Amino acid sequence: MTRFIDLAEMRKLVNLTGVAPFIKQLVDYIESDFKRWPEFDKTPRVASHSDIGVIELMPTADAELYGFKYVNGHPQNALNNQLTVMAFGALAEVKTGFPLLLCEFTLATALRTAATSVVAAKYLANKGAKTMAVIGNGAQSEFQIIGFNEVLGVTDFYLYDIDASATEKLIGNLNRYQGIRLHFCRSVDEAVAHAEIITTITADKTNATILRASQIKPGMHLNAVGGDCPGKTELEGKILTQADVFVEFPEQTRIEGEIQQMPADFFVTELWEVICGTKAGRLSQESITIFDSVGFAIEDFSALRLMYDIAEKHNLGKPIDLVPQPENPRDLYRLLCNPE
Ligand code: NAD
Image 1 (tube, rainbow, N blue to C red):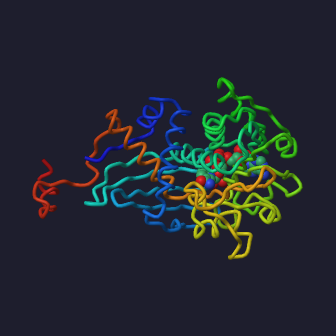
Image 2 (image 1 turned 60 degrees about the vertical axis):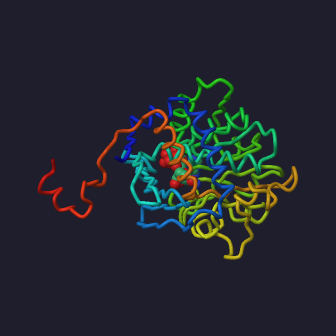
């Protein structure tokens, strides 16, 4: 049987611990998978673009498990009351190809994107940073704030969105959290004025300039999450030349990330190597670091692994007949004639 985790089961699974501890566990899973990066099959995701969005498949595998995610990105969906990003995922055993898990992955994407941002900031931001600007207060934003607060101890969040109702929604969702102080800002300038970390997590299928070089101060860490598709960026190119840039998988990030604005040989460091200690992360307190996040399949794999482990332990998810398991595996036809 395959385990099926729909939205209701996902809610149960995350709420066994709560969002913050779940992100914390996911940080550990992602870090441990990044530490064994060479063991994975890796490929840039397969993207199908239209004028208004993208649909992508993101596969990876180690020796035991194969995982993939289906995900879209349609910034204009919000106009029709639909999510910008929607996803589902699957995990299978490599030795037989049997699908172990089929699951909701929209919430899981938000959780794993936050966890990956936290992993990057743990290695790249100045230690003890307490303040973060969050530009773009849509569906992903609360998860980022909870993750940065829980794992890194960031306490003060300066919020800006072109749509003030998005910021009001965020404040309404998180104002019950002890230890998180939320500051409503009327401009990017106001939001970044006191920030040691800046997260950009906007959605617009265009080469936008959410942050200008003149807004960046020495020592800042930029967590650039929203630019994740060809023709979709958030940072003024000049910022990239003044900073040390860290990426997930360069072959994918050069197509989709902020560095799509730069020459093909633009120097970047792979995050996994910083985590393994084979490459330097932040060089000095004054350095400007950028995590040019686009989202890579291994992060989804880590989340699938965590969800599967929790589901197994607590017997969550519905067992479904996703693929046949006939008594005689040579007799598939009989399943149609004698379904009993
Ligand atoms: P969303 O549509 O729910 O929210 C986006 C928010 O950005 C909206 O509230 C919108 O008003 C705001 N915005 C748009 N332009 C802005 C601007 N110029 N200044 C300030 N705010 C602006 O989208 P979401 O689900 O929160 O996703 C946000 C972005 O993150 C998307 O671009 C998505 O593709 C990307 N994303 C990246 C990863 C990754 O791993 N890197 C993962 C998931 C989503």
